Length: 234
Image (cartoon, rainbow, N blue to C red; front, side):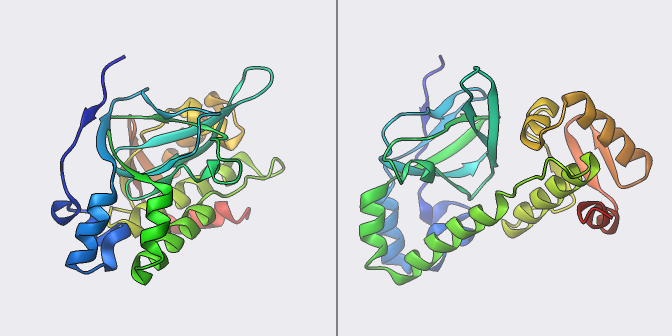
C-alpha cells in the first residue's frame, strides 16, 4: 500500500476555509483550530481512511476529493452507506459505541483533515461560532443522507440522487450543474438499490431526453425542472 502523504496547508491559507468549520472564527481562534488538526494527509484512490470496528477517536473533513463509506453484510456483500465530498465531515458513525460502524475509502486522490474529537468538542465549548458551524455541518450531513424507498421508481431514485449531489456541491461553492461523478455506476447502483446496468440505462435515457449530458464520469445537468419532477415521483 502506498504510504499516506502529509499535507501542511494551514487553515489561514486554505482556499476553502471560508466555507469550512473555522469560517466564522477570528484570526486567533482560527490559529487555535488549526493547531487542533492532528494532520492533513493525502490518500489515494482505494486507500482506507478508517475501517469498521476501529476505535472512534477523531473525525475527518474532506478538503478535496471524495470518500465512500460502506458496510459489509453477514453474507459478505458490500453496502454503500454514503458519499462524502469537500467540506463534509466523516466519522461520526462511531460516536455512540466509540467504534466505527462503517469503513471509509477514498474514491479518488483526496486530502483529509484529521481532528481529535474530544479536543474539538472542548474547543467548541469556548468558541460559540465553531459550535454552531459544527452542528450546522452535522445537520447538513444528516439531511443529505436520504433514504430511498424500495417501492420508488428507478428514475425517481437516480433523479433524487443527482439533485442531492447538485445541492451539496452548490452549498460548497461548486457548480451545481457541471461536476464529475467520483463513484462508479456500480457504487451508485449499490447506494440506490439498483443494478449497475439499470443505472447506465437510466443515464442513457436521461441523456436522450435532454435532461443531462455525460462524458464518461463528467455530468452536465440541463433540465432541473425535469429532475425535480422525476424526483417527486410524478
